[in-house]
Image (cartoon, rainbow, N blue to C red; front, side, top):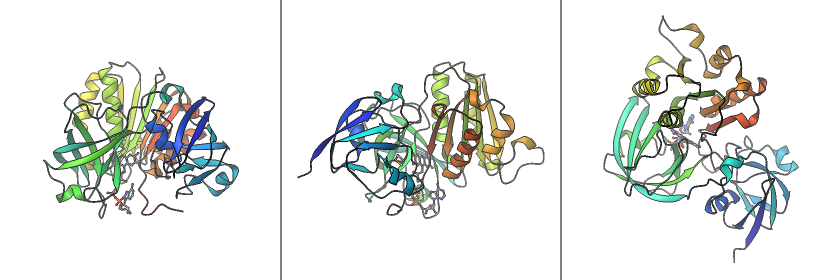
Length: 346
Ligand SMILES: Cc1cc2nc3c(=O)[nH]c(=O)nc-3n(C[C@H](O)[C@H](O)[C@H](O)COP(=O)(O)OP(=O)(O)OC[C@H]3O[C@@H](n4cnc5c(N)ncnc54)[C@H](O)[C@@H]3O)c2cc1C
Ligand code: FES
């Protein structure tokens, strides 16, 4: 029979019950405790914590997320850890404001309402919940969309705050051979039903008056639009600079949405960055990778609240820049669009 154990999180002093057949992170979701996390698949390291006491066994994970020496020292990934005794865990990253704000994770049906091609490899997908209100989430969060006919799922960030009519918007990059994304080319049609599980993710706006610095690449536009729309709805007066990286000018997506947001958020400064090729009249300081452009433009990174979203190399490069600029870790929030490993790496 599967046993249940107590897990105590320090320094916040929260206890949860964890059964041996669930991960510590899943048990926390079930009990409304919002621990810091990203991919939930042992790929991103957002849930890395220190095991003070007790026995765990870990499902497979990437050594990019938890190096062998860290594992030897006692660090664990809560999204991969199963408790085999009572545990005492020290959270490395946590947010007192967020930890009690967990929304229930649900699995709900939704119908495909629109499929629009934004570029040669990016689709704007709109779903409507079969029962509006059946999924609650914070702007910046994501859901897992189940791949039709398979047991697997893929994670996608909502591009707008919740709407009363149950409309969910996504911005999805299509990969050749991608188990889910290639289905958007000709297999998933308007009217089809999909299943979603969520909400997940800690990429949400924290209360602060610091200037906001947003940096995204590719489909990383999605949660940024959700955060910007939330700020616009709240008539926020915070200074906001949004750096968005694409390869070429035709890859710069969501111009109408950003123009509309600029009207509602007069303090928003949008800085498009092109890394591969650019028109002759393009501003030179906006060429290169997004973190290079940020470095060229920003003189007070340490004074900003920073949100990063996009593919892992972009996030890693930007984190390197922020660490060099001594930005306190509590002011950095990121969502890494990691790839689901075939059978889990190492
Ligand atoms: C928290 C989170 C939020 C996410 N939000 C979004 C989102 O809003 N929009 C979005 O488009 N994606 C998002 N992703 C990524 C998404 O979940 C899938 O990983 C991605 O769509 C690929 O899935 P797939 O089934 O199409 O391809 P898979 O079948 O998983 O991969 C097939 C092949 O495609 C290529 N490939 C897949 N992903 C990448 C990549 N990132 N970089 C380079 N090559 C790749 C690789 O060659 C890979 O072997 C998010 C991921 C996470 C963890
Ligand atoms: S490694 Fe645990 S959430 Fe990504």
